[in-house]
Amino acid sequence: MLMIDWPLAIMVGIGLAVLVGVVGGYVSARLAVIGSERRLNRSLKRGPADV
Image 1 (cartoon, one colour):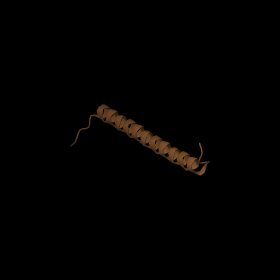
Image 2 (cartoon, one colour):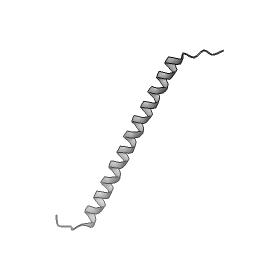
Image 3 (cartoon, one colour):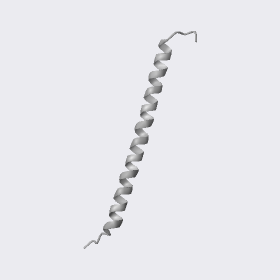
Image 4 (spheres, helix red, strand yellow):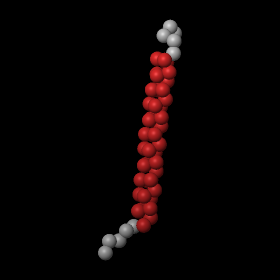
């Protein structure tokens, strides 16, 4: 029979959840920044050439 140390398991689960949330938020923020930069570059290229 496998005995699980529940407080430790709960802490590890919360830690993993926080880690996944932080990484997911960072990745989505990076993708949003990259997308807005692409949009900005596209609008700049479409605009007047003499800046």
